Length: 211
Image (cartoon, rainbow, N blue to C red; front, side, top):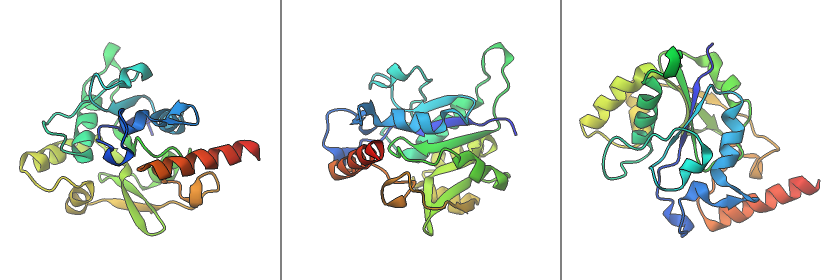
């Protein structure tokens, strides 16, 4: 399989963090939160695109940005649309366009490094979405670029903006991901939504570095 592109969803408000910078740019263990995510998926993907607005501070990572194609911060489903559209644009020097895109949130610093290997055996014409402890993780999955027209049509028609709503309508495969000792609470999808979550992540990383 040709390596997929990576798409990190980083366009949300992150209002529960009560900060002055976008949540994925908040420091965790001395690095922006999104830098941890980039490290987790970078080795498995052909390139990384950040679904994020321009001028918000993401330019420092030297990865292409894919701002929403629609006004009003419509949410992560629109971020997936923007990312798939950016990937589908022909690359320079005739570079081959990836057929799939590994989509992950920008606030999940403990993703399994072998996430792609766990999802890819279930590839088809539908998105393959991760689950943990029986709970679907809609923002983490492997998407065929062929779903872009259906996704854009869904948004054009004003249908629900939740990723799960689109997935349930168009069809998807779910893959259960096992607990891991390299994340707080053994949850590989632990995400930093609040200052308390950030503190938990900081403490976990400090303890791991001392062990």
